[in-house]
Amino acid sequence: MSVVLSGADAENQKLVNKINDFIGRPFFKSGKYSVSRSLLPFYETPTELVKVMNFATIPNVTRAFLCGNDNVFETDGTSDAVYEANDLFSLKIDEKNALDYVAFFFERLRSPQGRFKLIRNVADIPFTANVDEETLKALEQMIAAPEITENPKGFEIRANVLFATSLFRSELSVAKDGTVEIKSETPLFSDLPVQRPRLR
View 1 (cartoon, rainbow, N blue to C red):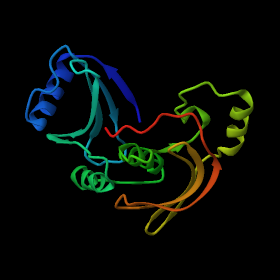
View 2: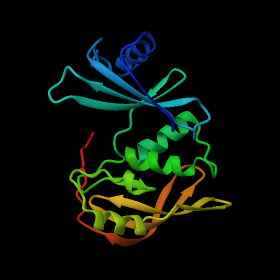
View 3: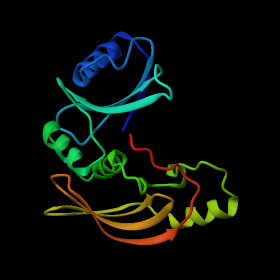
View 4: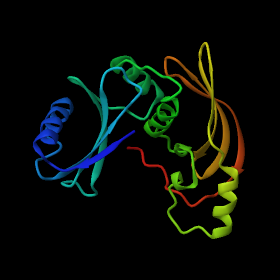
C-alpha cells in the first residue's frame, strides 16, 4: 500500500470537507490538520484509507476513514464494520493483495486487551523501548515469511502475528468475502515492549 503524507492543499481540503460532512460538523478545521492517504489495492472501487490528525484538540486526535468515489466510511473497531466496508467498496482479494488485506483488517480492530498486527519482519514490531541485540536476533529467527495457499473458498495463510505484547506464528483463513479467522496460533515470544492499545 503506497502512502502519501500531505498537508492542507486544495485536494486534501476538498477531501476533508467531505469527511466533515460525513461527521456532521467541521471537526477538522483548515490549517489545523494533517492527512495521510493510502491506496487500498483489494477494493474494486478506487478506495483510500485516509488518516486525519486534528491539531486543534488536546491531545491531538487521529481518525481514519475509507474514501472511494462519493462514499466516506469510518470503521468502529469491530470486524463487522470492516465487512460492511468490504460490501460498500467491492472487495476483491487475490494472492497479490491478501496479505495487505489481513494487515488492514487487523489494523482496524480495536480491543482493550490488545491490538493485532501482521508481522512480516522485525521492523514491523512497534517497539516503545530499545531492545537488546540478542533479543532482536532471536526475533529475526522466529519471524518467517508469510505462506499463502489458495483454495476454492479463499486463502490459507501462515504468518507471524503480534497480539498485545506477544508474538505468534498463526494459521489464518481468509474467505473471498473478507472474513478472517485465526485457526491456530503458536506462541513465540511474550512481554515485548510495544505500543499499548488505543481505542481509536
